[in-house]
Length: 145
Image (cartoon, rainbow, N blue to C red; front, side, top):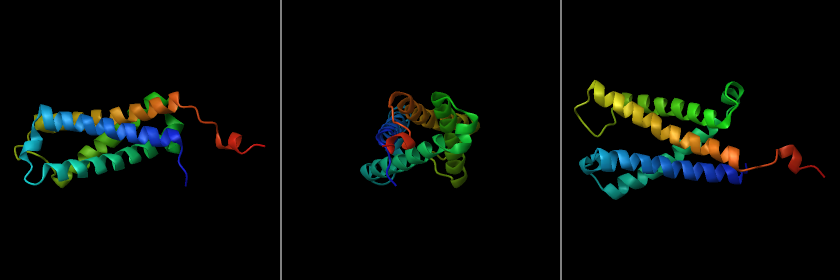
């Protein structure tokens, strides 16, 4: 299956921006990255791959028929898909016990949830913005003779 320029641009840019937001939150603001017990380079490389996967899933959620049916405006659909995926990822990571800290309290959980949702909303907004800005003719118009 061939993907469009809009797909590739929104996929990569949203992944990069979510990764930057992740690094700012965990590497600068919370200084969590100093607590990892193995190679920081390996961790950041694997995190980059994970953000490519997250961005791909986010794009697919954004373009899903179900979400498009209920939220037609692209920017709002980006926010909604980012919110939903961010919350699902937060819940998954929390249930699996993946955390930088051992002292988890309600404040930490709420802050982590909010930040995870914000990260994915950033990606969703980028995808929505690319949908609005980059014109691509409908497939049926491309194959006309």
